[in-house]
Amino acid sequence: MVRVFTGGPVFVGDGSILENVQVHVEEGRISKIVDAGHSKPRNAEVVPLDGCFLLPGLIDCHVHLCMDAGPDPLGTLSSEAAALTAIKAAKFAEKTLMSGVTAVRDMGGRGGVDLVVRDAIRSGRIPGPRIMASAQLICMTGGHGWQVGRQADGPAEVMRAVREQILAGADLVKLMATGGVMTPGVEPGSEQFSQEELRAGILEAHKAGKKTATHAQGTQGIKNALLAGIDSIEHGIYLDDECLELMLKRSVPLIPTMSALFHIERKGLEAGIPEFAVDKTLRVKPFFLESMRMAREAGVSVAMGTDAGTPFNSHGRNLEELLFMVESGFSEEEALLSATGVAAGVLGLQEDMGTIAPGRQADLLLVEGNPLQDIGLLLNQENIRMIIQKGRVVKG
Ligand SMILES: [Zn+2]
Image (cartoon, rainbow, N blue to C red; front, side, top):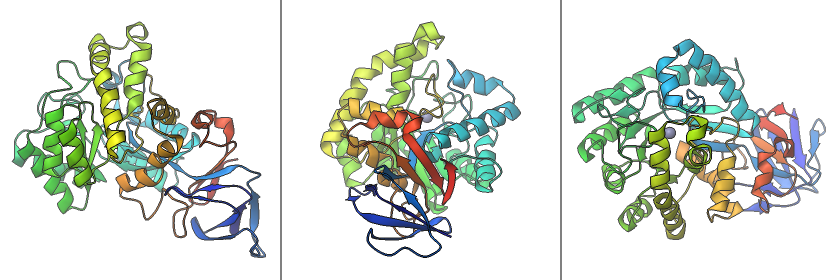
């Protein structure tokens, strides 16, 4: 059966907008795009856009499906039964999909839950976005995220830790280059893995054809990761000109995850968020906003990531990040590109998703109103009239 979408603008996801076209979907993929006046196949089911925008399914490059967005998600995760984590993660995955996010990168699981949920979605057992999962994050002993991470010290052990994640089925490898906000007793600005340790881990991942990502907040840690050959910088709180130059030269994208900081700041101590996390958030925020401005002006590629699962940063509210981006100076178009074509590149799936083009998997959203004028309308799920995943209608 051919499904034909026509009668509204198409946000392609590569910077262009198509008007007056038909988008044909067949066997889960976009089969062709032709002029609106073209005759339709006889057996086609026509989906009139009625002026709605057709968008690629959106992509969140940084989530934690194992974390529940409570006041202290790392504390909860490190103490609850893995079976409970799995039940919760499956629910979070469904909520994420129903918000219009059809693919995510999970950036640190526990007990293999992220991998099991990924596979259950892939085989059609449960609804959810396509997941690229890192399995356990890898950190130094006592480093950021140690509560759920694989602690490793020295290049040889980091190499072994990477091999373990790949053996378990990881799609990518996450290495911790600096301290962070959500772990007590570590500093966001401080280096953690050395450049040598990072290089050993990155080489090992690349050997297996896997991309690498790093939690990197402090300036020197960001540089260590870049010089060691990392594929993406997560957070990037203390960027300087040298970091930006390296990112541009090596085409390394930034995934800011503004939602993480903004929700901690807004809810604060009253909501039960640990004091160390609130303190550090308030301390780093001005530097973070300045770094975002510098990255935007330098033309560094920015991809949408939320850090969903951190305090009050709920799964299913992922698209708030787009609003935070626009409020921080990005255009609506830049924000949407960060969650489509650019994000697909971060996942290494640009041939498969992120744009509306022949051959791509048919992950599509039908959006009422013009998100290029008002990005906020994506936050009201009523405006997302239809969600299509691999050509199948999951909403609408
Ligand atoms: Zn994270």
